[in-house]
Image 1 (cartoon, helix red, strand yellow):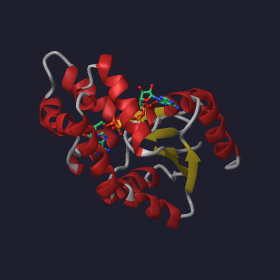
Image 2 (cartoon, helix red, strand yellow; image 1 turned 120 degrees about the vertical axis):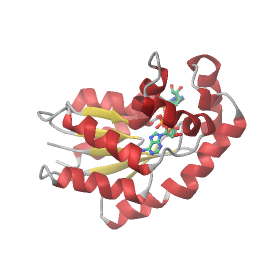
Image 3 (cartoon, helix red, strand yellow; image 1 turned 90 degrees about the vertical axis):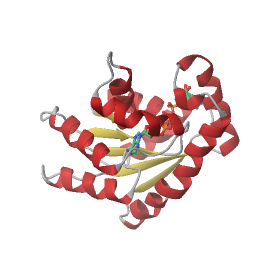
Length: 193
Ligand code: AP5
């Protein structure tokens, strides 16, 4: 059983790498962003989707109580899982505490938080490129992308120190080909066992 957090600013490659890591280590990849987009894009949008949409459109954070609820519900769908990789969660100290509690209830904990480091210029380039055909409302304008990056700096990046203090932090260079970054992440994960 192994539980990982993949962490980093918008566009750092969390989703891309979480999918590959989940496959390799037989983990459930849990992306709160992907779940929120499903709720928004369902026809008709769900009540949760309607509540969350303005936050995603502006690049702000969806309120903790909604996201913590999603986390708990989603985790409870996989009672037999051999572990999770959390992508885009936690984003605030309160979310981090809620994750610890949810894992402790099943005698589990986070093994490591893997931080992808990518410079701001590359993040904006990646997100604008994806925005050309992804249909993601939050990839369409530099203003919204910059807001996402500012929100990350202000509200989310302090969790780096939180996980460092717990001795769980692994910082990985997120620049370069996807496969190379994946191998860097695997090197860190393999050192855990
Ligand atoms: P979320 O879906 O989590 O988005 P994000 O954090 O903004 O991250 P992205 O999905 O844009 O980037 P990523 O790091 O996953 O990189 P990816 O692999 O996709 O959240 C969206 C919104 O939902 C938030 O703004 C918030 O409103 C809400 N939300 C979600 N979770 C929440 C929470 N816990 N609390 C509150 N609100 C929450 O890659 C990006 C692009 O780059 C892709 O096109 C990819 O192909 C490309 N790429 C990847 N790797 C490379 C590489 N090495 N080289 C070149 N291109 C690459």
